Length: 255
Image (cartoon, rainbow, N blue to C red; front, top):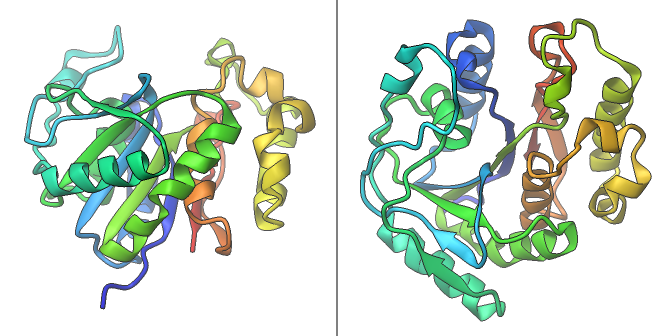
């Protein structure tokens, strides 16, 4: 019997996260505290494609989807094995739920995937599959997560990768403004209460939501994760703020 795995929402950070020893250590400790997965399904804020696109099922080059960083960040490697069996299973689950899929066999892992995985599973020895988000509609994505929930009982670790506050206009601004702290606290309280109607409707209900997320691609991976584990208790293995700026490091474990 395979134990049911949790579902994660990981605040993935920009490439400089690779130099943050404390955050890297927290991610590593989090992974070590969980059962080792047979495979990992990644859903990153940095890949949107309609319909759901299923990425490479063999080892291909990473996607360095960031700009104007030092050259060493573009030399990072994460040669994880492909996961063709998982790709077929994902395709079957989504199609059974009436959700169409397509293939993008050359599409490698982007930084929303490989940056946290370098800390959590540095050996790059677990098969990884990345799939795109087919929409930013929270209602549809919650159902999308529900369709993938059976993977948890098959040794697959589902990870949504994003950021709970993501306003790049605030980058470089020291201190934590009220819009950020209030939004972060609202999300935490909503998750603990499992009020997923509120979570899905966050843009009209959460304080500071429109400032925290001028665009919602970094938030909705959390909705996907919640959809895959709606009845499970919630915990926050990583908290705090990145470099004393309004980017919360809060990550979430369901189950």
